[in-house]
Length: 351
Image (tube, rainbow, N blue to C red; front, side, top):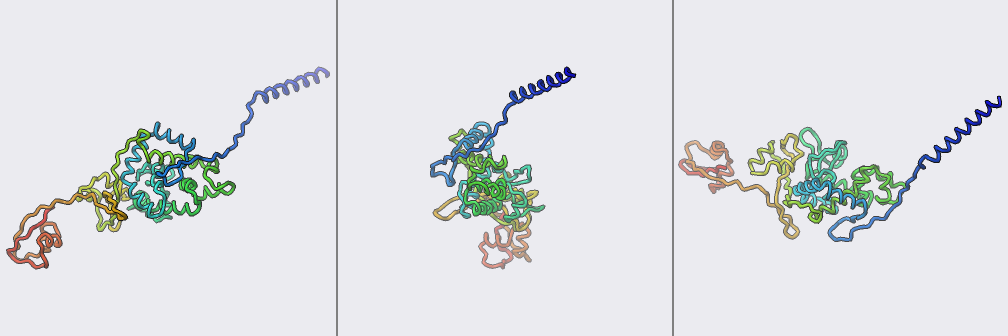
């Protein structure tokens, strides 16, 4: 009996010894605490926003210039089609010009860009937010892909967010995850993005430093070994008077079809219905406070044939016969009225 108790005691001591070794050899749980660091800001007049220059921003500058420089180069070259118009619209809405570069990290300035969550266009609008700020989405058009209309919606949204937070870093973060997301994090913290950054979703946590890194590079890409061809285009907004296909418009006015497609990505199947907004490429000329635009539409060189007016002819019948208009006939022949005479020689314009 005594031997039995002795065996139990020895077994208990052995278990205790094993547990002691296990505890002493196991790694202690490490607790990490977030320490707020006041970011340093650029002191330069070339920026309209306060630009932080800390380790997070520097890290993304290295990433974009070493590992993903092709993406930045392509985005900035596509930006030639949109930046002049975006800057103009943002100026009208009183927004800092630097925000015009936000599509670099949103879509790479690709109007056809689509995220896994269903956000679309230069500004990556979800359907609910798009409709909230006046964009139309239906089987014929998706204005999230319209560089002109979507920029107006983005300007309204950014201005709305600034009315809430009064801080552009918080505005940028809320543009990514929504105003509610940021408001919830601010309840127990100071009103600063860098104070609440560790509480944000992973994507939003990186979103703000990504933008500032992209902006710094975009302002001086050559400094980072990225050379961009600058061929800025300004958008002239028109409305379709009749239904037509973009290919027909490109042929008629000798426009580059691919450029026309990128400017009118909102047209489903590249067909414009009557009344739909159309974007045409133009060169931009600035004179004092006026913005003058000269359409990049080559003048159609006209040649003429002559026609001798016959019995029963009218300007209307002649115009239909030669595929022109009464107005053109009157203009090229300097006619003051619709009356014509038999035997009269008319010039007929032929494109």
